[in-house]
Image (cartoon, rainbow, N blue to C red; front, side, top):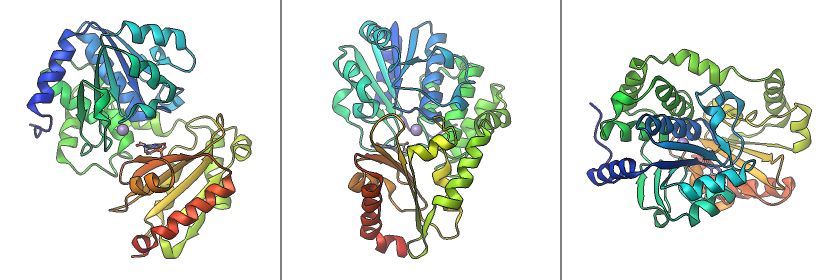
Amino acid sequence: MLKQKITPQETAAIKKFFNDCKNVVIVCHTSPDGDAIGSSLGLYEYLRRKGKHVNVIVPNYFPDFLHWMKDADKIILFDRQKTLSHNLIAMADLICCLDFNDLRRIDELGIPIGRAHCRKVLIDHHLNPDKTKFDCCISHPEMSSTSELVFRIIDVIGGKDTLTFAGAEDLYAGMATDTGFFSFNSNDPDIFIIISELLRKGIDKDLINRRIQNNYSADRLKLIGYVLYQKLQVFPDLHASLFAIRKEELAQFRYLKGDMEGIVNMPLQIKGHKLSICLREDTEKPLIRVSTRSVDDFPCNELCAQFFNGGGHKNAAGGTLECTMDEATEIVMKALDAWSDRLKS
Ligand code: 5GP
Ligand code: MN
């Protein structure tokens, strides 16, 4: 038995919304990750089994290592299929917003979603949701992933038996990727009860792990080597590090979206390290993406809110800077200085 985390009010509301709807649109955050796609397709599977007409619309491209999921090829990319997306949003009687806390996290897709008059529900695990934009806000930052939350919702409304094999694969993939394959944010024993339920649906978790982790090009491995050997700056006193990578450097390694995934975690392998920061020039827009990772109680989300126009989770957060790489590096130095007491201790 799972501990009951979803409130009776949330349960009643979501049950009613799922029963009343016919045409559902599911959306998740920009540059979708494993949890965004996994939770969206997991919910898609469930609602389709209930006989609903469902479409998943994502703001932009998602990485190749997630394309194995059933019906991943049916996901609509908003930036490439705007007319279709606008029409589906206009026809929807329920919009489910997954794995983000604020419409700004879905960029231009936030405009039609914000304007839509139908019911909107937020299902998410990020802090500080913008509750004003939703008819029902199921926000649980204490959970490992939105995929865990989707499982719990399906369970609490009595739908667990109808969860399909593909749905179980999707939700497993989301939980695994958002916890670094159960190496962080995953001490709640319930997580492993959920995994055992998903295994009972017949999923092969070892195969899913391989599909996600061993699906890169040789160029990506060389990019990792280059970053660690040539680019990584370690600040031993601060137990922190930075690497900054430009577009031209990425191009040398025939960069594909997703190739930088996980590299920011690697400096945390240094003994006693607390904080890793990555600056990456965006390949499409004139801006710099900031990714941060930490251990224990160092709050990356506060650091990112303060210095990088962003936010996120305590141990994994990000943001963006609109400036040159040299200016961005200076901002990182200021941020490290401002947090130096916490980092040194
Ligand atoms: P990543 O470093 O993998 O891009 O992002 C890690 C986490 O940081 C994401 O799951 C998300 O919660 C948060 N995040 C990344 N970029 C942004 C941003 O620009 N704004 C906010 N608010 N959060 C972000
Ligand atoms: Mn997530």
